Length: 99
View (spheres, rainbow, N blue to C red):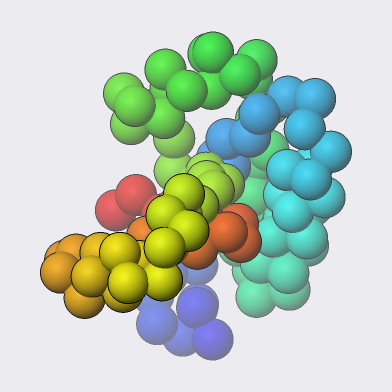
């Protein structure tokens, strides 16, 4: 499918925090699933501080980030969600793709 669209041999670096077992598991799942459609993922593990610096500097193709919401008041939470340009009130992992 990708080759038919002229996008064969795709390869991306997935930056993860070394020593984080959840990131290890997610990165392997992402790598295996994308391999099924012909995309190669190289997992790069970095120490937390280095991983953060790389993420802020944009030195990655893919990364695993967590967003959480620390607002416990439902009214305040609703106001935040309704006035924010993007919803960032997730507590589940998300994949960030830089283009």
